Image (cartoon, rainbow, N blue to C red):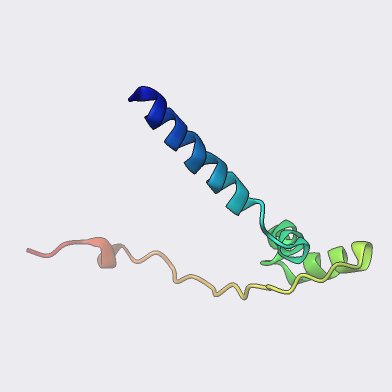
Length: 75
């Protein structure tokens, strides 16, 4: 019984590894550029240095100032 469970676990593990490794080269390249996605200047510098374009730039929105009244429960 334990051999069957081990074998089934091994098959599931191998299937998971196989599915994780199926990404295309373009997807892997874009994943490598994600650390530069929140800084447009760094993304431009990386593009100039490597020729790779970061397609997913993130626009950072400014956060509100800390409002202590907003976190207080009123009973």
